[in-house]
Length: 103
Image 1 (cartoon, helix red, strand yellow):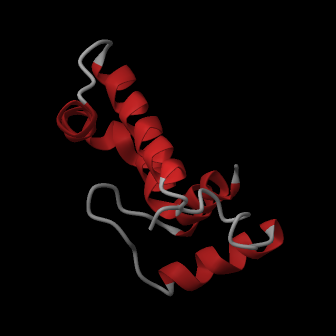
Image 2 (tube, helix red, strand yellow; image 1 turned 90 degrees about the horizontal axis):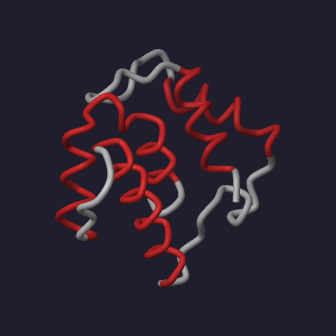
């Protein structure tokens, strides 16, 4: 969760900017900037919190090899679409995994 959630948030936040802006405001007290800036800062603040508590921040930290991401994405969707906020196809899941792989 600590690895995938921030990557997912970075990938989908524009689909419901108000929700992610409220998250930034209510959880981290971010009040300055545009709605998009607030959402982005909130996501980065979440990553900072996770780093501070010692959670892994990337799939690399978990020992996942980059070449495994595509197979992982295939396994995640298994002939069905994921997500409610934004329907996620294999390509979307792969993009999220790629974001989550980065340190």
